[in-house]
Amino acid sequence: ITVVTWNVGTAMPPNDVTSLLHLNTGETNDADVIAIGLQEVNSKINKRLKDALFTDQWSELFMDVLSPFHFVLVSTVRMQGVILLVFAKYYHLPFLQDIQTDCTRTGLGGYWGNKGGVSIRLSIFGHMVCFLNCHLPAHLEKAEQRKEDFATILHMQQFEGRAASGILDHDLVFWFGDLNFRIESLDIRFVKYAIDSNILSQLWEKDQLNIAKSTWPVLSGFQEGPLNFPPTFKFDVGTNKYDSSAKKRKPAWTDRILWKIKSPSVGLGTGGCRPSRGVLSVSQLRYCSHMEYTVSDHKPVAAIFAVQFASKADKPPVEIYVADEWSRPEQAVVRYKMAAGFHRSSWDWIGLYRVGFRHPKDYVSYVWARSDDGERCLEKQLCAQVMFSEEALPKGKGEYILGYYSNTSSSIAGVTEPFQISLPRSEEGSSPTDSSGSSSEEEDDSTLVLLAPKSRSPSPGKMKRHRSRSPSLAKFQGLILRPSSRDRGTSRSPSPQSHRGLPGDIPTIHLPQEELWCHGAKAKEPGRAGDCQEGNSFYQTVLEQGGPRRVSADSPLARADPRNLGLLPALRLEMIDQATGWRRESVDQAYPCRRMSPTSPPGCSTSPKEGSSP
Image (cartoon, rainbow, N blue to C red; front, side):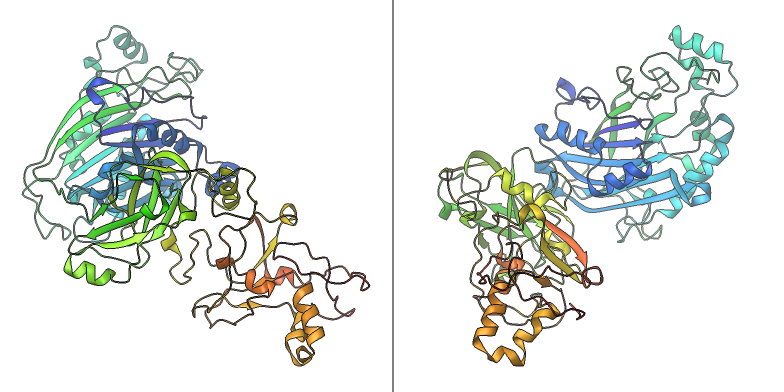
């Protein structure tokens, strides 16, 4: 397990962090889990708004650097400028379960998140492990405040389940961050002399955290390796020189990494936790700072641990079986077997990932894990089977991995070894509305208008009350879907399929008021009804809980149902009350109306009488 902490001082990320993560080095090439704690990430309002819509630049950087080494983002949590990310090798994902996060604000009396702690806890091969990233109060005289804040974080953070409800109930805790402990008593000139002369041991006994470990009960049992690297704070940005400003801050080891193993004697009755199973041993292989990074006034610190568990859960919750190569669409058959006790959900899905994927939502395509005999297979420990459609398969050659995503645990419960897909590419010059043989990146990009970059879609399991075949269609109350101006020409959506028999939970399609007369008493006149049906391309979709309204398969309204479109065009979103005042321009009645696609511009319709409601 590699742990990294870095106060980045609101700086932009550097170009490369390979050396910080100790990649491509002999003794650490077998790292299984990497935890990264950041503090003071830029959290000004404009940055926070952007990061709320898209992944922040620091997280993007670490995913970009780690994915070629087969690391996948397991979980992340952010509280203003404090971020924690946990990565693991993809083949460990099924053994990382019960993943939960929490955060505690301690700034401004608990109302501001510039200080505090964020945590990710998970079960690793059946053992409970917690990563806690903290940013504690600054300044030499605030040692007692740091003690109180840490105690508050330990008390406030609680997790679901009886396995480990509090932070200290976990079998293993890693505590790290900008803990802001300083060097007491010694003059700044002596501190700098000790650093330059490499006699750091003379500073250890005056380090506030070293003193606190022996005097504060809250720190009992926490261990730390020797501080054989220079103090990591405070530097002039862009240099390796300690603070030369007028404040002349004394160098200090503010950035630290500690760990604690739960005592085997702790049993049931302490927060409802279970006793630790067997002996757990932790060896620190490396503890160092990285002077080569100069974007901040802090230097990053990294530690590498070898963790020896007494036992290991070696059978994944879901086993997936697949052929070594898919060279024809009919070979895209996936068989899977769920372990006894696995909590299956009808919202589970199987994702197809390229080798080197970044996170569980970074799939190429997916299929719902909804076999007809799923429950029977779970009870009798039989294999269930699903199949990818030809349209969902990537064209060309490449290495891929299948992963079973559990909606209940919000994690991947089973993966395959890499296998080959070798399918012929679609013919050039094919129709832009034909998606059966194309999965081009240009088409993929159109689905990212409302999504974070490089995240194909939200989890299909997030829409439990609206069962859509498309995982990217969320449920918005009172949403009007209208083509954006750039899509009012040729649609990039595939040809709509016929509308046959809608289930009861499909969204009802309602007409604007100006069209209602066509479906009322006057709809008995075939000519008038036909004009209304053919000539109006504006459509309004309201998502309701009620039953469906059946619409003719030939109607543009039927084709406007998003569930009939394999790919949605870019959409402009408006609430109903904003759209009720919308008026369409009158058109010359002399021109005949033509049948239009759902994404065609409104060019021919009966305009409402003046003064009437739309």
